[in-house]
Length: 505
View 1 (cartoon, rainbow, N blue to C red):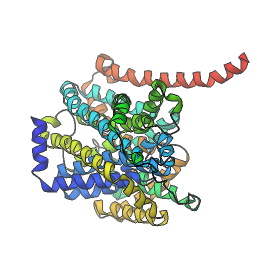
View 2: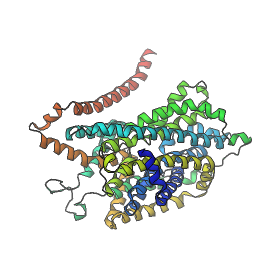
View 3: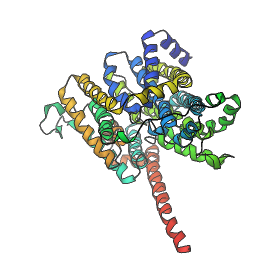
View 4: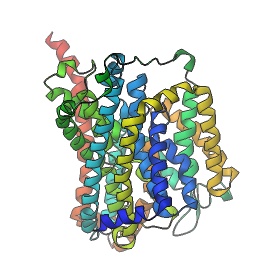
């Protein structure tokens, strides 16, 4: 009944519906532009949310994130260049199909797989968020601090290629959140006498710098003259542009398994779509009867990763709505929008702002249908139009829009300077393989973690011993220890294997 009311709210508001349609179109287009991720687009558009109602703002950005994940498959299939990291595994079979003249079939496979995977994840979000929120109402500050620590360590350990670099990225983001006045004593911290920093760093210039301007710098350092034009081979057989029902049935087991993998990965803070797509691809290839043909252009090799990367979308919102802990960069940005409109995120949100939450669920389901239709009928056209625009026109335009967005949030040139500074920092982080995503999530999480820690210590007569008396808190502390130990063990074992093989030889 609450979800039905959410649909009624959406359809009774033409403005909200317009933003959902715009989000679907914009997300697909942005995702299809190589290097310009959905996160970057959302970062530039966050300032718009200051001027529209909360549901329209949240629905707009949420649908962009969903459609952007699918949009990355367009350039991956047509041009052998993933529009987003979530589509990296789609290249393996997607582009070989294009070279065979089966681009239409590949794009339709990506469309239906993405929609089914996303729908599965959205249903899990709708069913799971309220259930978890009911349980978390009983948690106190010690348990919440343990949850924050768990999120910090899991994000740091799995979001980067190196555990050490992931932890460094997370600590960097948390340190940025400490800038400003102390919330209890009102003493300035790390402000260096700069009055503009007394209220802390604004999320908008940080996002724009780390995700947008840093990407512009990355593209500027790349020699696009060597890329050449992408010539898509036309279909010789009319059937090569169509997806038959028999082929859909053949893909369904891989779509189902990919959706399940993506949903589980989505629940883990900071892991993301890129991991989900490769796990689903590897598992699908291992189980497939034609596994030896994967990588040469088979539709199952598209169905598995595309269903997985979109299935991440819904479950990654569960920690945000149920705990107030964002599980992805897009969720972290949505948390910022919630805060802009004065909405407290956490287990109480279903009681205090239930109409907005269920309206957001409805918007997600509508967005899935819309981007599926766009992908099914228009993805080839979108890909061709993007290929006609030279990078020398795309990225300077993005830089200009980014600077305007940074200024618009608070009408401050200081924020523009911050955005440019973080653009340089973000570029250096990319060069050194540090994670900008981990830094942003940690920046958003840190104030809540500090508040929970201080509240816990105020409740305690024995200092940090209060955490030893809370079984739930101890369980959350143990989770990242187990996860990090498992990853270190796996890496040590993989490093030992070649040496052992050499000794045996």
